[in-house]
Length: 339
Ligand code: NAD
Ligand code: UD1
Image (cartoon, rainbow, N blue to C red; front, side, top):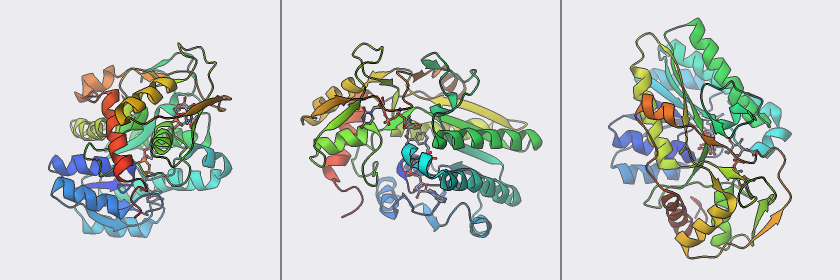
């Protein structure tokens, strides 16, 4: 059985679906601070199989021990944490507490339960600003431009040092590029609370009429059309990457740490995203170009070669799929999981 922390959230719920469809038994552990049980109900309908749900906080060691004593867990996929970049600069203690202390408690509880396989949600942000747009896993990590990103780097180090001290651990550090999209049924997707910070949820809310216009942060970058380039990855491709990583670490004979980029290997500009969304939705997305956002890099994308070689995984879904699936989710669920 796989323990999925944060499994009621955006990426977690899609991964739970892929796990159930691949035949795994799953127990989700989530405090519902940014997740929804409704997402798991919908996952059950799609999979024809239920994931167990346990309400709890990864900072609560007793609750973790209790859940691990009930279920025969063999591996954990660890999504739980806070992820809003702007908020992380204002609330560093909350971010270190949830993301770093929470991970320490989780590792202690797993060790006590004899569970040594873990897949961790990291981010391309750990590369900092390496001075080249193509990020590959051999590059040293840098300095993330925000506190959220810094907590990801700290947890990567925590996992590496834990594994170095005890070779029973098998660890996957998955560095996500820009996750977007939804399951193609349109029944599960991203449900941001309040004003979305990320590009695609904002575009989708403009298209559905919830917001007037998109502000594009910077039109004077040294890129073809002057807007930033990012490597957007369909959340279902990303979810499948977790199952591939889980299988890969199970093959480690003597423990170890595997670091893999999960990205498509191609950059798309903000204007390209707007255009692709308009095409897929048939709606117009009014925008204005405003000042650059602090901390943004002009362009970066993944070198996806290592994941292809070692995980036998690569993205299968196109930019059009990302847009069409986001639109299906947004138009069918204008208020997300809330009625
Ligand atoms: P999300 O907020 O939708 O999911 C996180 C889930 O964790 C939520 O269901 C929330 O209720 C739960 N949670 C938060 N703190 C918890 C705690 N202390 N104890 C138990 N549960 C807790 O976010 P997401 O987009 O699905 O991201 C999942 C993971 O991937 C996060 O660790 C995030 O930092 C990482 N990540 C996300 C992105 C992205 O763009 N979405 C990019 C890189 C990395
Ligand atoms: C951001 C975070 C990163 C985090 C990731 C996923 C920063 C600096 N980086 O990445 O740490 O891992 O989200 O949560 O915040 N854009 C607009 N208008 C908008 C929103 C975004 O023009 O309203 C542009 C941005 O300038 C950027 C692109 O769209 O060029 C993508 O932005 P976003 O979705 O926020 O992702 P990142 O900034 O790449």
